[in-house]
Amino acid sequence: MMRRVRILSVVGARPQFVKLAPIAAAVTAAGHEHVIVHTGQHYDPELSDVFFSGLGIPRPDEQLHPVFPDGHGVVDGRSGSGSGHGVQTGAMLAALDPILAKYAPDRVLVYGDTNSTIAGALSAVKLHLPLAHLEAGLRSFNRRMPEEHNRVLTDHAADLLLAPTAQAVEHLEREGLGERTVLVGDVMVDACIRARDLAAGSLEAPAPGVDPARPYLVATIHRAENTDDRARLASIIDALAGLPVPVALLAHPRLRARAAEHGIELDRGSLHAGAPMPYARMVAALSRSAGVVTDSGGLQKEAYILARPCTTVRTETEWPETLKDGWNVLAEPAAADFSRIATRPGPARPPGRPFGDGETATRVVSELERAARSR
Image: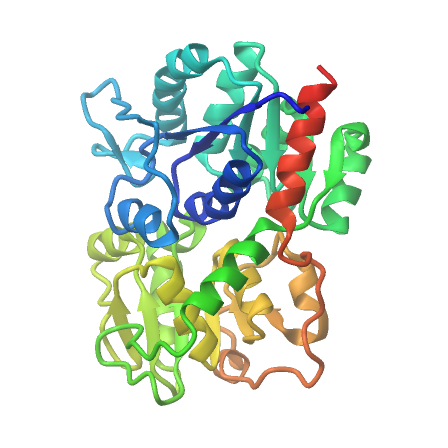
């Protein structure tokens, strides 16, 4: 009989909560112990509490409240005084060390590419705890992105790499990490399909002033390279405001803060700014939409899974599979044809299934069991 395995999940940001939901259900179904540690990276209830309750995730066993040297807590990716990634990561690392030592899990599981990911990875390896990375092998090949640093460093620290796609496996093999790698599929497919089914028939406005019965786009903008430069952000907002259909802008706190600092109005023209939505509601809004404009890796993939055309306001993507047949297009907001691209119809050919079949969480738990047996 397989012994009970203690798995400790480190999460702290909205995309990680979504990935956690099917994993938590699969760990429970397999009869293993699951310790959930919330780093506090996203403190806002709109980005944290509602996702736990809306996705049916058990409350965290440990809720961290890391404090920076200046006395401020974590505020959506930076300290209250604007301290950078190193300060945030260091604060979370210091808070995680005693928690991981306390539980001494059979496996620490980190998710994605946030500062919570790299903090959890560093804490685990420094304490000589086995580390698994879910969503391993993604590469944008843009080393200006903090997420790229986090992905690469975590992959090279982990001893079990749970890759979502064949392309991710190829990246890891080229970096000499093939022996640690297992292709499991993408857990976001599990989460997205479940949320789509739960939200079937919902007809709720995705943002104030947007009629859900008429064509609209969903937009999210939050990455530092798009929000921190005033000219860049103004160009994106101007382009969205000038589109010929309503745009429901699900405004991340980073976007609202930067727009206020730069003096950029978010509610104008075709733009209708609303709050980030609980995951099932967001999936329902995506399913009904005419398309998506985003800089989010997760939303590119969700749009592909739901067969919604996506326009990505970046120069690269971690998900090249979404570019096939034009389901996702990389576009500059200042381009003359941006409006045509953003409002294009979906391709004639349906999207494929490069991200798996919706059973990834079960495979992940099986791999964690196998790794525990081999120790």
